[in-house]
Length: 126
Image 1 (tube, rainbow, N blue to C red):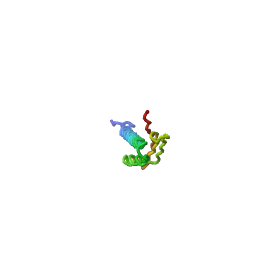
Image 2 (tube, rainbow, N blue to C red):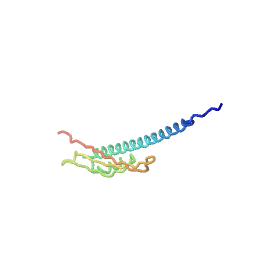
Image 3 (spheres, rainbow, N blue to C red):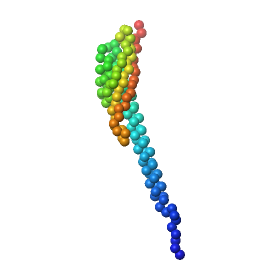
Image 4 (spheres, rainbow, N blue to C red):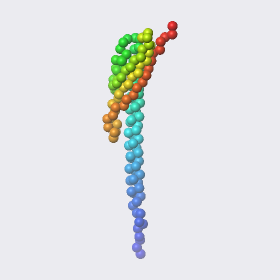
């Protein structure tokens, strides 16, 4: 009497390897996505802080955009644009800043994340 082997012997190993490979691909995609989201948040923070630094200089001194550039550089970004819109009295207004943050994403490579922010200084009531 001879025992016959089932036709699908060993197929469980192939299924386990396939599922493990699929899980690895999904995990890698999640890591790349998470790194991109963190880079975007860092760029937005740098833009916010640069705009606040520039708005803080309105009515105090004429160095509005250099203050924004210094804060952007301190956060690892580069100031791409700084657009102040001052009120006629020169003591209030808004500033719009745009920064570029270089990042290295896994698999994708080096990219530049761009973010902008707006901040203002209100005039004091009389």
